[in-house]
Image 1 (cartoon, one colour):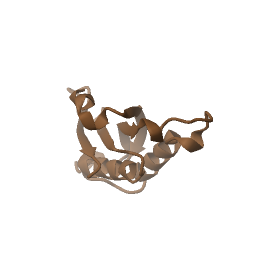
Image 2 (image 1 turned 90 degrees about the horizontal axis):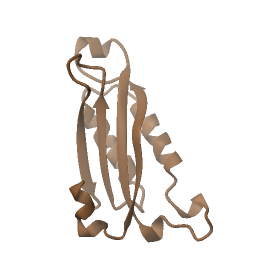
Image 3 (image 1 turned 60 degrees about the vertical axis):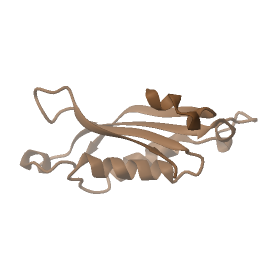
Length: 129
């Protein structure tokens, strides 16, 4: 990933959740409106080492990715999304709401929507302003 070469990330740890599989109400086609479908979510959080290293080996001194996972699942199940972009923007906003997160790379994928594609999805990379 070329973003890892960005000097703004030189002092960061990459914390990730890959392949988080959730059932979500997503899509605008009639067959998508009829039932929830599987969505795969990938999130990479870039957190400065000082904010992601524990001197006591305790989660309270780091970014707790259990909470990130919970928040993403709650958002994905909270409503119907016509577009993956809308779902993804909300996921990125949730991650960026954590003060220690400097940057986020995230994607969503719908693996079951087209019979001739392994998956279809969107991805975004955002730095804290």
